[in-house]
Amino acid sequence: MIDVRPFGSLGGADHGWLKARHHFSFAGYNDPGRMGWGALRVWNDDAIAAGTGFSPHPHADMEIITYVREGAVTHEDSLGNRGRTEGGDVQVMSAGSGIVHGEYNRESSATTLFQIWIQPRSRGGAPRWGARPFPKTDRAGRFITLASGFAGDADALQIRADARVLGATLKAGQSVDYLLGVDRKAYLVPAVGSVRINGAIVGTGDGAAIAEVENLTVTALEDSEIVMVDVA
Image 1 (tube, helix red, strand yellow):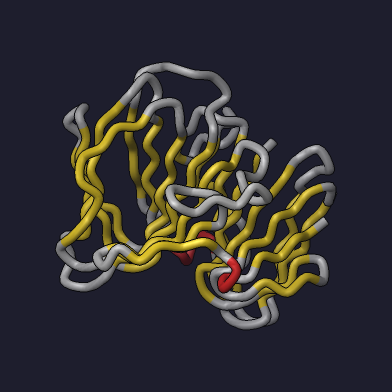
Image 2 (cartoon, rainbow, N blue to C red):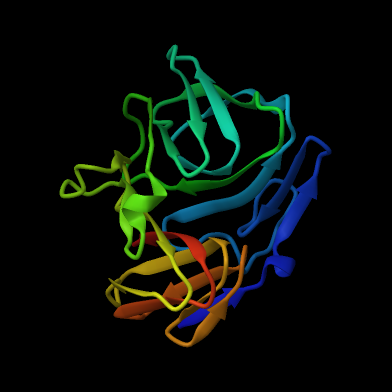
């Protein structure tokens, strides 16, 4: 099953400084049919105006992955962490037993990003934050793991969930295969371009909710940048 959810069908909010589209129920958007996908609870497509951002606020018991599309986001938290994550790169915050953080666009133009929340395998634990660059050239024509809760993915940012966040960049006509397994779910969004997944067409910003599919073949219909979450 591949359920394509067009960008125009997503929930959303316009706060002036923040323009957001919600793939799943979030804040003021409530759709009983879109409460999550396995352990994936939130996928927000955010545009943050220059010189603005999310003021300090608390989280607990959630793995929060930020994939910066364009611009940069500056992170500050109650553990004393400070960092700036640029377009194409990723930051991860394991909220654990509790953390207060702020996320700011201190650039001169808008920052766009995917904000992805995954439920952890267990509650509690010491909160932590980390970030690292992922050059797009390294994922040309293939999936690479950006964040993972599996021990074998040593080069990825670590999360406390039975999940992977993956990225790939494909030239028009290029294909990449992924062994998902029928007992897993996936959610894929093209940040740029459009792709065909086992025959289903998915455009820029659309979401593809995938289940009961052993193997995925993703073919770029144009130059594309894709992000996918593999969850139980």
